[in-house]
Length: 568
Image 1 (cartoon, helix red, strand yellow):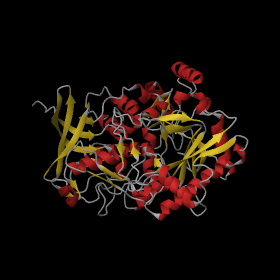
Image 2 (cartoon, rainbow, N blue to C red):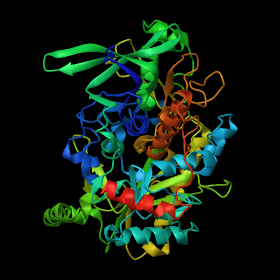
Image 3 (cartoon, rainbow, N blue to C red):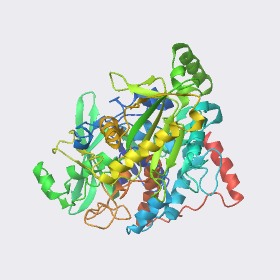
Image 4 (cartoon, rainbow, N blue to C red):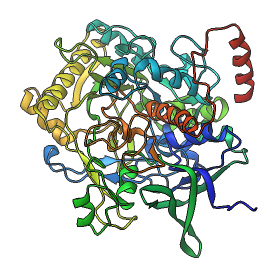
């Protein structure tokens, strides 16, 4: 009997941070046929792979969905830009390349909510399994996984970054050499997903490692329009393919399961287009409600960030490095050695701190770069003299939503971020903002300090600071939670990531987070995919060896050596 070419064991919708990792892990099982669908194109735009190129991708529709929120009443009715990757590799192709997992308490909190298997001790092995830590394995890091992670290179550090770390220490914030180690709190250098001056996206790492597997099919330019649901079971998907002659709709079927990895916007959108969501809302936009699941699209959370831009004198910043002659030298350095300005991530230094003495753990995060920027006429960032510390409050109480406007798959959904909707969040961002100013006033910066040019010396009272936040703050691009994991009436998936009420359908991306993690969300999205892969294979009757620590035995040195050869 000839096998139907449109039938697979697993269909993965979305080849982003999570989707690529899931495809890599599932296709290692040679008996399983895997289809990976991506609405965007291939990751062949050169700016994707140049780390500093992210600044020119924030508004580029070739690789970016270019979403915006609805006008937010708490933000002077502004629409906030939400860049999301529309390309093989997803948002890992346009993000800041900062590798942060979050805090132990984040995951222990998920577990305490009744999500079995999601405590920190239970997810740490999945973080380690996915990782190739360039400096080697230890109790907190793995070696030999597809995802390249390395410490910020010494030859890339600028004097101002060290000075800012010293200023933070002078403000009673401890030094921290590894935010992903025993504790997150402190000031230090970020670990990054950059190798030899090239961005290490999920496509470049996970997908590259499995591109020759005959049981994996990757289709780009494939916009999934709906999940095919028959008698309460997901049997496949319907997707639209673009061609020179126009577009046409195709179908693919899954023997085992369909997994949505579209992210915080596209996963709930696709559920609603498929008839899964709040019945009243679905019917209001002309969609047939196949399963009433009121939590779809709810529970949206994001980190809102605001800049403090400080003028400096007598210490180099990126501004000097972007002058014509210096920029020519930087281009030469990058082409020759993969170093210099173009090889930098979005932020060199991180600070995780407590906004007040009343909190038990770090609740705020700084992304610091020896640079200041402002948008040009096209919305891309251009250098400005000075330096920037952008700060976000890590655990907002405010909740928003993502919902379809119509039954048209091409219509962007309505994103209501609902920033600063609680008094708690308003007080927290003011307190965090004041702590950043304290750091800039520390003795380490005294001899270099000029005027604060954003927001400036006239902004002092709580009311003035809050008004500045409302007028200027932006997303730091960490939205999560719209298909939350749990067992309450607003949960969308259970703790094995199965959609409640629909068989053979799972979600594996940042939308399943019941509460946002403390920091950047790319690494947690990858971990979620890694864990989902094991659950899928277990439920299919495949013997799975659960990941353990990767550094316990002398035998592991042989694994490290073999992995290094394979990655090189």
